[in-house]
Amino acid sequence: MTAMQSGDYTTARELLEQVVRDYPGTTCADSAPAEIERAMAGEAIVARVHFDYNVADITDEAAGTLQRKADALRAYPDIRLRIEGHCDERGSLEYNQALGLRRAQAAMEYLGSLGIDAGRLDVVTFGEERPLTTGSNESAWRQNRRGEFVVTDGDI
Image 1 (cartoon, one colour):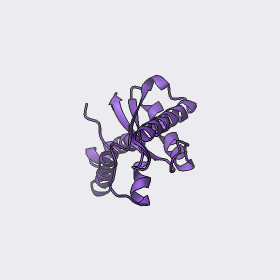
Image 2 (tube, one colour; image 1 turned 90 degrees about the vertical axis):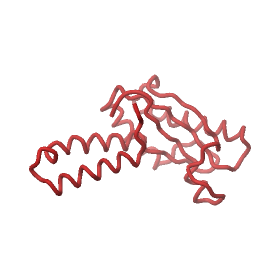
Image 3 (cartoon, helix red, strand yellow; image 1 turned 45 degrees about the vertical axis):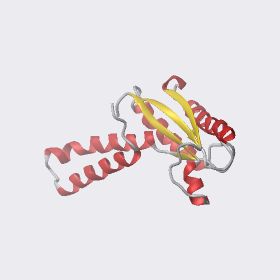
Image 4 (tube, helix red, strand yellow; image 1 turned 120 degrees about the vertical axis):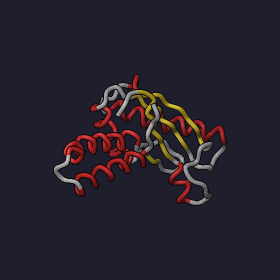
């Protein structure tokens, strides 16, 4: 199975919404709402969460993202996720590896508090090794302090 990324689900949803608008009454448009719902669940499942500097605490914004993710995971009980913890470039490699792991674990624990079975979730840390964007400024650092969610089994 090839995992879709967040933008892929967004594009699929946008195209399906266009079909509904442009071709009302067709078989494709009539079946689109169910597919739009599926694409929205996919968006929620792979949506990133971001963290504040030097902490693994779940922010209010991340909590909302994780709530939507939990709702979608309940609708798709066969989905398994790998939660990847990431950091910005500041700090030592060892420190950022540990912080990335704490971030991934914090996301897993929060999903667990929402009723998602931990057996469906794996955690891994990449520390600062896989930046989302380059740059040594707050904008880049903010994007790199994140948790990524990768579907490892099941289908949306």
